[in-house]
Image (cartoon, rainbow, N blue to C red; front, side, top):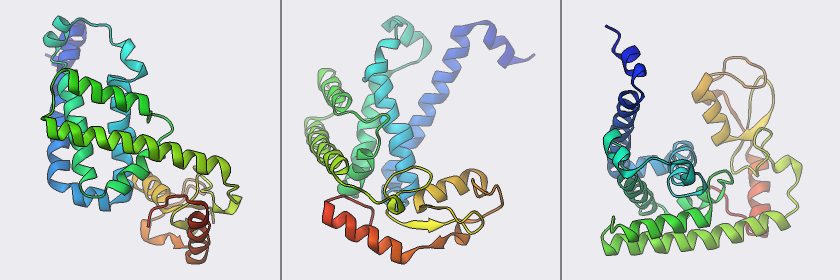
Amino acid sequence: EDVYRRSRMNYKEHAKKYFGLASKTWKTLWLLVKHCAQVIVEGHTLLEQLLHTSLDAQLYFLVGPEMKSIKSSPQEYDELGFNPKELVKQIAEIYMFLVRVNRDEVARIISKDERYYSSTTFSKAVSFLRKYSLLPPDQLTDFDAFVKELAERVTQQRAVFDEADIPAEYLCEMMADIMSDPVQFPQSKKIVDRSVAVRQIMGSDRDPYANTPVKVEDLIPMPELKAEIHRFAKEKGIALEG
């Protein structure tokens, strides 16, 4: 008998399976970051993906603008195995595992997230954690301090970006953001930030412009351009990786 097909006949059973899988996945991620935070922070591409597409995004949906879309009752939460309190707690703890390794780098990467990051959402997360006593007082104090520091940093960095007249050749051709480590695809000759190039190659092993096979080691470094960009960023007060 097709168990999956049967579960779709009963939406609650179907949803319960997904929430159960999601809960196990987040617990695994929590354990992974707790024990491997140093490796994750040093792997800058992985860190950016984790922060932007997982942590920032989940806070946005759990306590941010999209929380109004969740209209089930607490009884239905229990029935389906959906525990938003535990999720918010785990997310806050994961942030702090990473922050303890490199506070400045984590803040720098979050500040680049214009899709999901909002100082209001992060402040609501602090209020949520405090309201339900989800973290010990010392951990809550640390997370609250980071959230406030992050808000100030993001405001400052975005003001700097708005005022800086960034030369076009300093911008990633794919993301239109200032590059920290420019590299060139060997086939298409397009210049992008290394983190963007690595992410593309990890997903398809191809040059996204020429649609030809490429490996990370094939990327051509641009040391002179990198030095120019970093001098410019230092003059303007723009925080870059490295």
